[in-house]
Image (cartoon, rainbow, N blue to C red; front, side):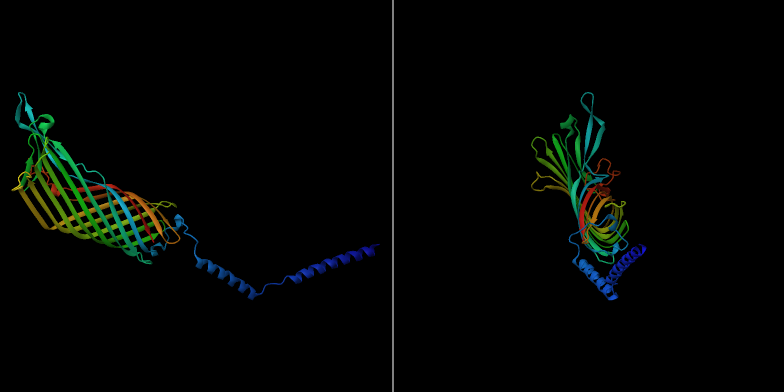
Length: 388
């Protein structure tokens, strides 16, 4: 009984061994030449994908915007900026009101006179600023040009103190220098004074920009052109009829060219698309300046100009210091284009810019000359632009 069982077990083992041997003979190892051919096919497919490029622009992550070789990026860039700005002067008077005290009995107090200077109140003005430039790829070097224009007018009105409160006072307009142009209201007269300011600024400069990790830095220098005009006009007219009796005009200008230098820094906030930025600029301009003053009587058709004075300086200086800080948002696309937007606060300081306005004539020897007045411009800015 044991012999048939043993023979059956031996036959089963031989059958299993033969099946395993046949399966082993069917699995052949791949040759070296076949492996090289397959790798070549994979490389060809990858090359075709690269040459086809992306199907659409895909925004890069914030950590990809600035890199160690970001300064090699270049191309054309353009931006438009809207600046809401307001001028301030330390001397910018429209006129001066004199009130005479009335003593008991209805008589005028001969030694008592009150006066107050009324300053112009300027408002915010929306002004355009455009910038165009180019950075050479691979170097960070480039150029840019900027254009900015400011044009604003303000006014002030007042009636003669006799009309307002019965006081036999007066309103005085004019500039007291050499010559002394001074005009005062009579009874039942009113004054309307206006002051306008126009600034035209053009910059042309070379620049160098460097970007690394989360920081960007730009330095630029070149030439600035400036044309500055300010026009003061005061009209004295009858309250009842509106007929103008006198006009006082004072115009100042400056036109010059000089060096300008600017620095700008941008710091990214963590891994976001937001950044903080700050930039400063200083300019020193050399040019011509002038002043024209006149007292005009429009009722005198034969000789309407009573007084006229003009002067011009062939050598004059104007210093300008500017500061801007704020927030920036930008996105860089796979195509290489970058879109950005900025909002910030802007401050400009113009020492001794001058003011074509009224000067206190009662104490002209010690009163500040409005032509030496400092000017401050302060406001907000919003900018959009692109680089490609």
